[in-house]
Amino acid sequence: MLNRYPIALSTLSLFLVACGSTDPSREYQSALPSEPQITPKTEVQNSATSWTGQATGNFRALLPCDNCEQHVIHLRLNDDQTFQLIDIKRSKQRQRENQVAGTIQAAQGNNQQDKQNQHPSQNTANEWLLNTENGQAYARIQLTAHGLKFSLYNQKNIQNQQKNETQVFLHPVENMQVSNALKHVDIQAEHVQNVEVKELNDPVMAHDYFLAIHNQSDQALQLHANDLVLVDQQYQEYAAVVDPQFLEPIPAQQKQWIKVSFHYPASVQADVIKIK
Image (cartoon, rainbow, N blue to C red; front, side, top):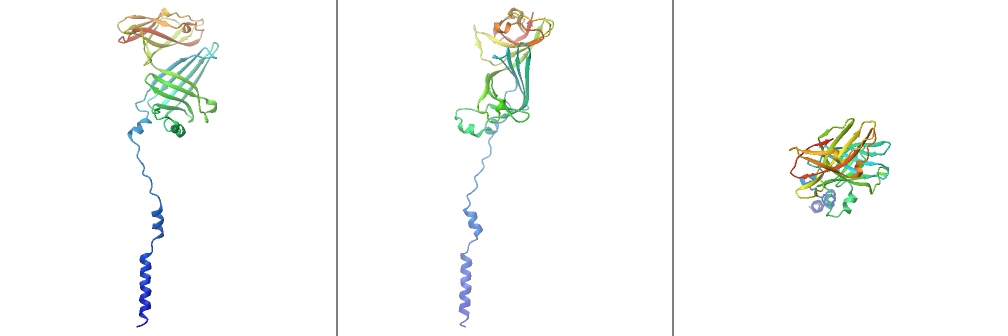
């Protein structure tokens, strides 16, 4: 009978120890911080990086050039988020043409450092990168109500580039019909869209056009302002206004771009540009 008490006490001690013990793995798990909740992207965030509904079409600029006669940039933005760019520098003896193609990528969020340093009032939703086919950033564009702000990166140090080499404005353009009476001369015209309106006598305004003139003859071509006439759909004619710098003789077998303005009411629908 006396031996039963030690056995009973031992059994009770084991039972109490078992009840008071804890699982070490549970203690470790309870000490871990809870995982942060992941907030799904909203439709607004997605729209800032989606090319759908953004500006597409042709954009062009005629630029001054210190070491050449004329500098022309033509940019084509496509619905499939690709682009083609032609950068032309024309001198008296020859013409240099650089063609670049690639893809369009949203600039917002690409550079976290820039994003942190950016003022909240600055909107980057309309900024896009033009990447070459090998993945390098070639230029940055910003969509505006009147066209594109175009910033060309310095290609010599593209990896660590902090500043833009060239900043220009590209105007949206649409093809315009041309009736050309000149022989051995090819002329194509574009109507400059959505530029800042230059009001004259209301409701008459100045409308700008770009003309690409390719002199395919063996002699220099001299155009005058009165050689250019715009005709509307009611057969009304409007005289051209051309800056003298665009009326320099075009050498034989060379191509030159000129800017022409026609003054007519905003309600008029232009039909064709006639070259006499």
